[in-house]
Length: 299
Length: 244
Image (tube, one colour):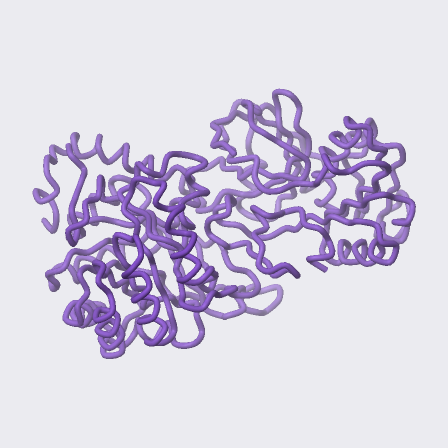
């Protein structure tokens, strides 16, 4: 079967995208396998002002998952445009620039610069749970998100993906607000805000107290959210949340997603994306699937 | 670095909670102070486990580790013939190539194992090596250091053998051209301070929780005098003056 799919006019050779924050800018994983086999790569989350990220423990294993509080450590949008993009362009795959932020002015400045750069799509992260000043608020309140997305839409000439937080007050209202504000597509879900406690120190594991939970533990909830959103919006959706196998990919597509992003699974198996792509071909043939629209949103 | 489907050759228990796992090397690179991400499970656990190279022979790798949680417990259950995946060798190790003269290796606890491969590589290029090994109570790995060291100094904090106290009490960095250290941060901080007083170059190996192990996720970044550095990529070995 031809695994390719087109989203917002952008051709993906398959629906597997490496999720932001788990794959850097692709070059480390490219030492292990040819990352040009991927449908796309979403870059490490960029901010207008470079960030050092959070102090203390940043990653922590949990049952069927992990928590992270990296805090958007990144070289800034400008450095990415000047140096990062050319490096990522060595890979024959869709280049998605993921951008986070804590105020609308920074989002707009970043979107303007990235619109003039050689990227395929912009993924607006309104949902990072690990940035103290405001990053989360955009992801929680639909009205706040609407304002941010509308502002970025005006200054962004690239296809605009808006990445949603599962911590939104109401994920469907959030999705509709972003769609109305001009999102070309949505990606969901980011990590779930969670807590880990070190009982010996009688302190939270993470300096920020709360951190983001990801991995197979969140998959069924993410799948439900993708399903609910896909029933209500017209724009394409990238499903995210604990995807680790080709079967998981088909589940998200049947729930309505047009493509998926794979994150935490890369840490369990550094070749995870390649394994999933290979298995997906076999699984589709086994299940008698010939075209994505035969099964997309069938649930 | 490579992703390697390997096989366990042997497993030895040294103390109540310290083990040595021997695996096939399968042509992997392996240098002093580097590490591998080990995995001997499917998705029962999420993350691979970073373990330093204790010894690298032509065809095998040895990893010494302490059982501290679920991952190392699973590693300790492995038997000869069991499959294991190795991603590596990873990170930047000790600068053996640029080191000459007389070197002190200062290790504490589970910081001791990576210094064994280091001693081997230094000796092979003609560097004279003294080892300062600090244990809590039980000694281990001394036989492994023996062939590569001119002198081995041993301390125990609460044990019966060697000097009773901290290994840093025995170290006089002025006698050495370079000092490499690996162990608890409090010990390495002391070693770095002693070296700084004598203007002896000092290299330390940092430990950190990791997710990807290959430099992509920034889960192990630490603040240094030269900005944020990834323990898994620019490290784990750093010049001590940028850390302490």
